[in-house]
Image (cartoon, rainbow, N blue to C red; front, side):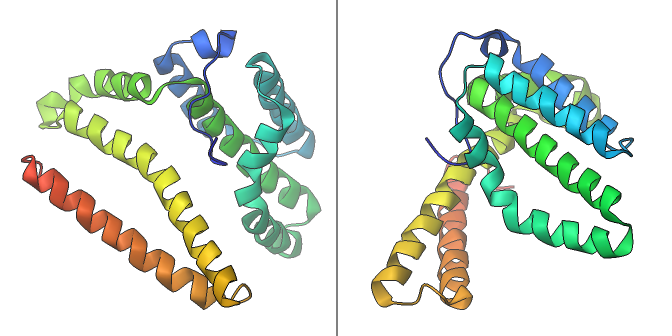
Length: 200
């Protein structure tokens, strides 16, 4: 399974919940997170999300895999807020980031991509009056979800090549090839879409 969590089959209550409902809950949680002010509130939200992972039958190692990419960002963010706003704000901000990341990962772990796309397309249908194409929005969402594991795979390939050349300590030797390969993948994807009449 990808460390950024693709769908994991299951029959739990969380798995069976409608994709649209999960997206609404995720959006509502994002809006509500703006109003969190005390560390205990962030801790309570984190407990709720972790309990949801338990209800979904996902092991603790899955939780660790979801928050691992947030480690350095969290440390930098915590350091900034610690200096600028004090330890309580630092705890709240990093806690909110962890909660939202875990919640988004839980949605993708327990919902098929096709169900997510269908829910987005359904929600966007009223926007046809504004000349928004719901099917195209759904396609963009599907491509975005699909590109995450692709970029992770590219990063792993570049890291393996680094180790083979003894350049494991060089950020430049990692970032430049990753960016180049990602852009090449984007170009190939764009050409494929253009060949199917989706060139704009």
